[in-house]
Length: 528
Figure (cartoon, rainbow, N blue to C red):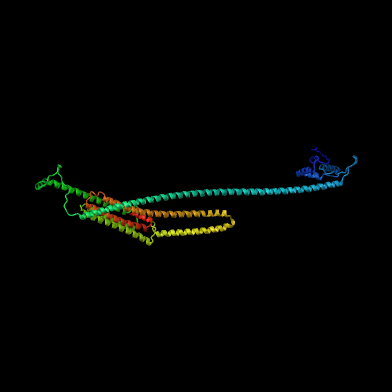
C-alpha cells in the first residue's frame, strides 16, 4: 500500500483537517475507492461538517480548492483538471473539458451506486420476506408434525385397547365354552344317574308289588286250622317218650301251670311288640302332622290376608286332628281301628292340603284376571308387554341413530374428509352403543335367570316328591320281618296312599309352576 497523504488548507478549521485525513488515500483502483467512499458516506455527518462543505470554496481560496480537487480526483483515478504544461515555469491552466468529464463520470457513478443500493435493498427485502415465509412454513410443518404424532399416538392407544378388548372377549368366549361343556357333562351324568335310580326304583317297586301280591294270595289260600306255636320243651333238655293216654294226662296235670305261664309270657311279648309298632306308627303320624303344620304355618314374612285366612283354617283343622289323635292314643286300640283312623286322618289331611293349594291357585288366577299388580306379583302377560315395549324402544333408538348418522354424513361431506368423519361418528355414537349393549346384556341375564329358576323349581319339586316317597316306603318297610301280617298290610296300604297323594301333589305343583312366574313360585314354595 502507498503512503498516507494529507493536504492542508489555510482557511480550514481543525474539523476540516480531520476530514481531510480520512479523504486522503493511496493510489488505488476506482472500485476500491468507491467502496471506501460508500463506507465513508454511510457515516453520519454533524452540522460542522455540513458547514465545512458549504464553505469549502470561497473567492480567496479558489486555486487551493481546485488543486485539492485535482489531487483527490487523481487519487481516485480520474484525469487531472489542469492542462499539461511543457515547462515547469509556465502556469498550469484549468481544463474545463476534463472538469466536465469528471463531473459526468461522478454523476454516472452516483447513479450506478444509487441503483446498486436500491437493488441491494430490494434484494434484502426479498430475502427477509422469503425468510419470514420459510419460518412460517417451518412453524406450520412443525405443528402438523406434532398433530400427526398425537393422532398416531391416539390411534395406537385405540388399537391397543381394541386388541385388549378382543383378547378379553376371546377369553370370555373360551370360559363360556368350558362352562357349557361342564354343564353338558353334569347334565349327562345326572341323566344317567337319574335313569339308573329310576330303574332301581322300578325294580324295588316291582318287588314290593310281588311281595304284596304273594301276601294277599297266601292269605286267601290259607285254610282255617289250628297251629301249634312256641312248642314247650323239657327243662332238662331230654327227649320226651312216647305219649299214651296216661302219660299225656299226667304230663298235662304236672306241667299245666308252666304251659300257661309260657303262653301268657308269649302273648304279653307279642302284645308289647304290637303296641310298640302302633306307637311307632303314631309317632310317624305325629311327625308328619307337625311337619305339615310347620310347612303351613306363617313364615317370617307375612303373606297376604286371603292366604292368612286359608292357612289359619287349615292349621286349626290339623291341630284339631292332632288333639283327637293325642286323646285317642290313651286308649289301646286294635289294628283295624288304628288302620282306619290312619287312613281317614291322612285322607283328611291331604284333602285339606289339596283344598288349600286349590284356594291359592284360584286366588292367583283371580289376581291374574283382574289385573291386580302388586309389588311382589308380576304376571307373564305384563312381563311380555314390557319386553315388547323395550324392543320397540330399541328399534326406535336404532332408527333415530341411523337418521342422525345420515345427517352427520351429509353435514360433514363438504367440510371434512373421510378420516375425520369416521372419528367424529365413532365419538358421537360410542356412548349410545355402550348403553344399548349394557341394556341388552342385562335383558339376556334376566331371561337366563328366569329360565334357570323355573328349571330349578321343577327339579326341586320332583326331587322332593321322590325323596318323600322313598323315605316313607323305607320307613314303613323297615323291619318287616319282625312285624305281624296285619301291621305289614297297614304299612303297605299307608305307603300306597302316600304314593298316590304325593303323585297328585306333584302334578298340582307342576301345573302351578307353569302358570305362575318363577319369583311367585319361589314364594309359594317357601309358604308350603
